[in-house]
Length: 571
Ligand code: HC0
Ligand code: SF4
Image (cartoon, rainbow, N blue to C red; front, side, top):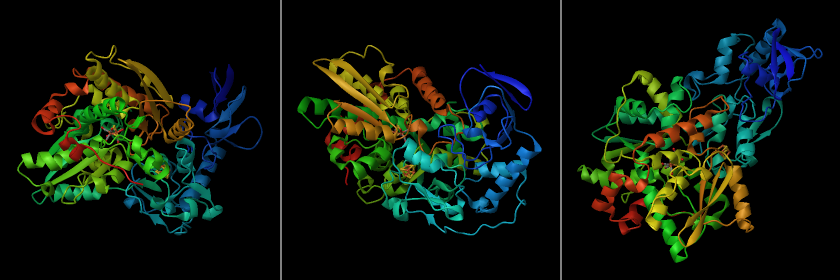
């Protein structure tokens, strides 16, 4: 065992780790700004410096291994003074327009400054060096004057996502993460996944906020009906905005909060996730039976669609023609439900709450407009933005009485909620496609080969006359690796699920920011718990879905389905 002391208290560790990890495990506070447990330590912010008995210089705890016999000091006047100096310097050169900042109230720098009281430590020498607010993307805003040079966005983009859109350029006050040729981000190959915004500790990269627009819509309805829809992964993460744990299930409280915000109707994206399975499952069976393009690729993740269109257009024929559940539900609301309510599509405003920044981008697609040319999804809020709205309106989230979704577009099965996890769309599709094709249920409902965090998961399912070969790939860097293998003929599958973010939507770029290392595991568990508690766990058993086929769509892949539930892609 490694024996060590922190502030004169003795500890032991049986595994290798850094000094920072040892301190955190033992509840010893060490300030950090550039560190995030899901990324590589870079030791840039100099806030985690500690003293050790191995020589005079202080060392960055995040990048120093725990050695046997080390005596660590985190609270000496020397350490505290160095934190204050380094923090004061970061603040002195920082844009301090906190009151209008997207990160206000959830900013790591703001918290540190408050804790250490360094607001007057140095004269403010901030000027708008970079003078660059890039709002060219519908999903993200970059305000590089707020950058603290932590490298987290650069790492998220290159290390986690394999996208390399942002790289650190320049030195000193001119250092800044930039795009190639400093182009506006919308002109790069950025897929709007939002990983950079999720990891940004401040407000330098944030979602392109729709909070004010939503407030306006809710407070000035002018006779319109405001309909919300909520994605699968929002319900296991929204409560983190209110101090609860990752994975805590708050479906009913979230619906109640949305009603308190002033929504007239709250539908569930899970309903259309079930519907997606009907359409996509049928499309798969059709492609397999009739020699269509294989492997068929899932099409619900908008970051993934951006990636195919921008970087792999040769795979466009492989994409399922199904719209995402967000797209399907908005289409049904505006083109079918509104009419049933005796209203025009223009009278309805659809606000969708998503764990994802790229959904903002998806909502603006030309293909997803009504015949009269208005967007079917008017506003997309990230889970974080919903949290902000609820706080702005002083709604007591944690003590709300649970509320139910409106029907019929609020009914869903366990198969729908697992869409939020990597492997969930595949598992849901198998539960239904197997039963429809073979006229008997899958031997097991919990299909574990497609679950978990392995980057590329593969499985073979005996499927009557054929062996159905499937794969599940999540996190952009793994996707690029998979596509390389596919191009080289190293893998062969019938059906592949792709999710751009690690873990799937629970790891979406619009989910509440977390500084823990296990938030994905815990959100994933929350999702599977919801599935297990449902009495109906197969999409084709969703009665509201059955009903909408009987009363309107007739059958999967019908003429009406094609018009309202399917789409096409461009490059
Ligand atoms: Fe997802 Fe979706 S599951 S992409 O991950 O398919 O964002 O949660 O809403 O649309 O349902 C995200 C999550 C969704 C969609 C659904 C799909
Ligand atoms: Fe990179 Fe994704 Fe951020 Fe675009 S949105 S810069 S791809 S991390």
